[in-house]
Structures are given as C-alpha cells and as structure tokens.
Length: 429
Image (cartoon, rainbow, N blue to C red):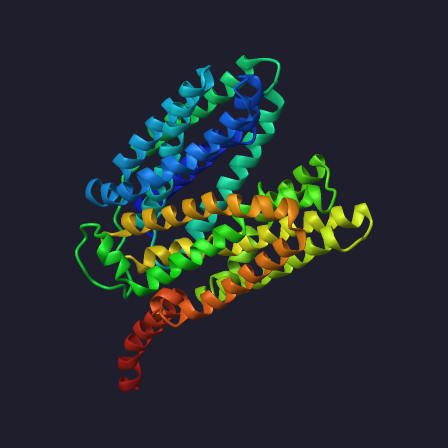
C-alpha cells in the first residue's frame, strides 16, 4: 500500500467511525420516539422501520451505476447530505407524514453510504491489505454504534421531545462532519488483481448476473443476513422473551455481548482468517452459528434454571459475534475481487441490495416463528446455518485461486521474484 493510499484509508476509517457513532445515537430509540414521544402509535412506528427497508431497496439498484459513472466520493457526499437532512427533519417532525418522509430520506442516504464507502476501501487497498481494511471498518462501526448508543441512552428522556431532537441533530452533524472529512480524500485507484470475468465498466446488471460466482455469493449472502442479522432484534429476541423468559435487561446484555465479542475478537480472528481459504472461513461460520442455535435451543427448550437459560442466551449472541468477526474480513473483500475492473461499485451495491432484502424478509419470517413456534424456529435456523456451510463449500468450487486464496497468490509472486533474482548468483557460482 502506498503512502497516499494509507492516508486516504485513515480518513475513510475515521468517517466510518463517525457515521456509526451518529447512527448509534438514534437507532435503538427510533421506535420509542415515534410511537410514544410523538404519540403516533405502534403502527406508524412499524411503518417507519419498513420505510427504511423500502427506501434502501428503491435506491440501491441505481446507486451502483452512479458509483461506476461518477465515482464513489460524489455519491457518498450526496448520500450523507440526504441522510443529514432526513435525520434533522425526523427530529423535528410531528406528523405521521413528516416522519415517514424523513425516514425515507434517512434510509435512502444510509443505504447508499454502504456501497460507496466499501468501493472507496477497495480503491484504497490492494488484494493483500483488503481483508484487514474491511476488518477495521467493521470494528469501528461496531465500536461507534456501541459508544453512540451508550451516550444516547444517557441523553434521552421520553418525557421531553427536545431530548430526541438533540439526538437526531447530533446524528445529522455526524453525517455532515463525515461529508467534510470525505471531501478531503484523494482516492488513489489500486490495481485490480483478480480473475473476474472481463467486460465493460458500464455497470451492467446483465453482466453481473452472468458472473456465476457472484450470483452464488449473493445467494449465500442472503442466507447469511437472513439467518443472523435478520433475527437479532426480531425472531431471536422474541424467542428469548417468550420461550426462555429472558428479561429486557438480559436481552440488552446479550446485544452488548455480541458487540463486545466483535470488538475484542476482531483482530485476533483476523490472523486466523487471513491465511485461510475464504470459502472455508464462511463454511466454518455456518458451523459456529449452528452451535449458537443449539445453545439458543437449550435456553428456551432445555428446562434449566433461569440463570442457565440467560447465560445460554447471552452466549448465543456472543457466538454470533464471533462469526461476524470472521465474516467482515472475508465477504466484502471477496465481493471486490469478483468485480471486473471499474465495477466494484456495481457489485457492492448489488450485495448491499441482497443484504437489505434479507433484513426485510428476516424479521417478517422470524418474528412470528420466534414468538410462537419455538422448536420449529430453532430447527429451521439451525438448518439455515448448516446451509451456509454447504453453500460456502459449493461457492469455493467456483472461485479462482486469486479470489479464494489471495494470500497464497501474493506469496507465490514474492517467491517467484526472489527465485528469479537468485538464479544468476547460482549460475555464477
């Protein structure tokens, strides 16, 4: 990595931390704000959460083409300004219409940030450094969300709407500050190393769908997000409360254990992940999550003490965090290495779209099952986790050595150069 790439990457990481910090202020309290503080009811609050998903699904198909044509930086700044306006107006909105329109702007801006930032990381990294760069991004995102949520929890007061207005104003300020920081980034374009299918860089969806490995990764990604992230605050929490008798404070402890596991384990896990086949790392994550669902099954169906059930439930979230820490330096770099030259933005946007679909479907399916069909819920998601392992191993057969083992290819190039340099010495002797 060059000095210019390193300087740009540091600014990008600072930006990631700022955006996550701002989101942490409001995300945990959005439902309470709309339903109770503004007095708009549970239905409107539910619609707000749905609007976030719908807005993302609407804008993401166009975001990839815009990133390819205009570059990630202009798209990112436009997304940040849109999100800042949405956050600020949400904090001031008093009617259902104003709240829903504000949520749409905030959701659209947040959705476009993800592929734009991911594309900037790709441009500022090489195949050798990309895993570490995405691991740092994930680490800072979780740290920022955790710190933001902690501080926001001390500032918020459900009896004062002005305290929520302050939270949304801080979130808007973080987005604008990030826009200022990102405007100073001069993105060097790293050479693309990979055997992805060649083609034009016009951001063609037809070309993307013709990439068999990318299609398989997208299917795998849908199952990953559906079986994990799509259950955190819906099916799994409902199952914990209804089947295991988990208190709300214990549920908060479980979410904290998830974040703590990511923050503590991220770089220790990275050392293991960096020298393993990406497809097999994902396969191992499927097995870890299968164990997590077994532990969750014990928490709700094992007829143990309340303390044991709580410990098992908290352990479930921690195991999910371990899997997430393994995925962060694996999946995003793989998406980048599957993309042909100039199409990283299109591929990142497509994968973000898959994620949003999974996050929309996951709660809708898992919520009712977790609340009432306890044993079928555990069995179903145990099978989904084992399906992750199967799909990952199948994907590995579609990947080239560069895509699945970039570290081995880089090492072989170094050895080859060293061997070439050594040959004259041997001949001379």
